[in-house]
Length: 488
Ligand code: UD1
Ligand code: MG
Image (cartoon, rainbow, N blue to C red):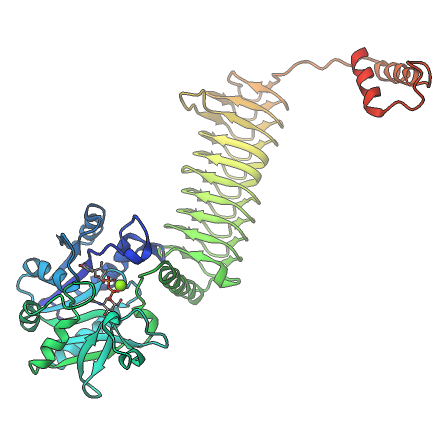
């Protein structure tokens, strides 16, 4: 479709009073993106000559989103309604002949639907063509008045509806195609004759049809595509539709999703064939998952990269980290800060990795913190090992070689290096480098006192004989305990 005479105009200046929020409406998120970004993405493939976004509330935050899609942001300040917004956009629209106008708060519309709207508009030589939908509950939307089966006569806003018109259930999506030689004069006629004292773009339709111009309507094939986000409940519903679309796309690509309604997946996430996603999982950001992986319940992965055959056991949190093929982590593991677990390594329960590289086949199975550390292949990190990487001011690295054995409950005070093949005895606090193949023991030496325990038991038994002390026949346990303590 040649669209070199087309301008796209997105109206995004409104505050969104009904959301009761300090954030501008079009910056609220649904389906993992700000509302306005969805509209920009749907329009991008149309190849319009120009894209204009009308900004107003929080223009300084909204404009950069527009500009990141090569759109020109035009400031509408103050906001006198959707008709006024189009007047403000006029100069930026320039010489385009046709304008596709979309609200910034109706993010579900698909490119295909926009294409068919434009095609109907062009084929019918219309002054305007409106994307409409038939809704069981039309409340909150402007209603379409039809002149005949094919022709529209006017749009009436919800606040201006007569009792009879309230029954109409074909609604205005606020997505339209306008022939600009017809729109500009109609805009000049607008008057703020309504409860909100605004200039309504919708009023231009009546002006055009009164002048004998043709206004057409295209009914959206799926009425959910036109859902607007005026309230928090609308936002939740729109988000639900986006999430469902994404899950369906992944399932179509060969991913198993159990209890799909409980799984939340951002738009840019990918997953390979035969991967299984269990209930209650969140896959966020640019997470990429290989084939035949299993992501168990309650895990949250954001900007994670997983190779093939990875298992993420239940309740893991993985952020900005990479797991190579065959890795198993969790349950209850936390990985963050560009950590990288290499092929076949194993990260167990209650293990945290921060900015750490774990070599091939290495295991850290229990209750461990590895921060700013680099660990070679086939090493074993015992339960409760802690890298002490922070002195309150700076972070320091820990380096552990290949085939190293770190005994349980060791503290490795960084900066420190443990050479290949070295052993660290359990319970050590390592402050100096350990050479390759050495054993480091850094703990108090054990002392055994022969017979101490039986002597102790005899003393305690003697002290408990009735009447021996203060004549009490049935001394309370707690008192006995206290006496014993004092004597020690
Ligand atoms: C609008 C339509 C209504 C339609 C509904 C569909 C009008 C008058 N009404 O109502 O017929 O059924 O959308 O969702 O157009 N905006 C500006 N500048 C302004 C006012 C609004 O840029 O001065 C922007 C808003 O940011 C929003 C869009 O225009 O993105 C629509 O405004 P909104 O207040 O949501 O209109 P609705 O009441 O939903
Ligand atoms: Mg709206």
